[in-house]
Length: 351
Ligand SMILES: [Zn+2]
Image (cartoon, rainbow, N blue to C red; front, side, top):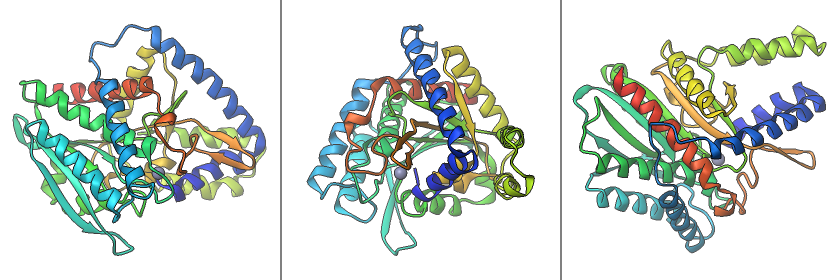
């Protein structure tokens, strides 16, 4: 998750809504915590899930990599390169081929995306599932976004074990330099032809999926949350002139006609699990969904747990700090997120 946008979303959550808005959010979190607890006693949904113990094992390795390379795994650093190496090794171990694609970000740092292709029955249609593997320079980035990497590595294991070919060709993408300009996913989208873009049935983004006691944030496909936001602000007596620039800028974020079906599928999935979700637009531009917006249908899964730290609203505990270690990760969160991704993939492959 990218920090500049997080500040933007903080502004929306707190300065617009003032402190009353922040307090109300705190209550919502309590409800979410309850919902989360309920989940653990609910029988597993039919789609199956990925191995959360194995996902935690990947996080241990990524944390070790950061420790051995100056405390981070940022783009253009030895920790970043060691992370790419670990991901590639895991792909090879699963009997698949890793493609390493270099690019340059706005600071002229060289990053590399790691991409694996799982051939589907159709060569003309594809699904892309992506997570960024780089951390910020301030910390090891284990929840943000080692957690997404761990989920994708186990997704590869899942497909390596199952002989049944998916309908659509699946690209599992580990993006570099998300924390520095969302550069990896951007370079990838720029490299695609119009026909290739047309064949993409969905981009599914996975970011910060290990957060403890999370609120689950999904992409708001029909921008309904903006209308809700306007109603709330109006009710609180805010002048239209004050909130209109914010809501107008949110409305200008591109969307795709296919976004809504993915949102509805995710909502139904979480409703079935008894888990509340928050529909959101502003953070779509804050992660690797950004380059795909309006070009292909997108789905996004971000788990956050906002906390007031003095005057500062933290997106999740230890967000972009040196304490973003495995301590911040709940295997149950990883498991729920993995079920949601599998459920989306099942749905898309049946369409
Ligand atoms: Zn981040």
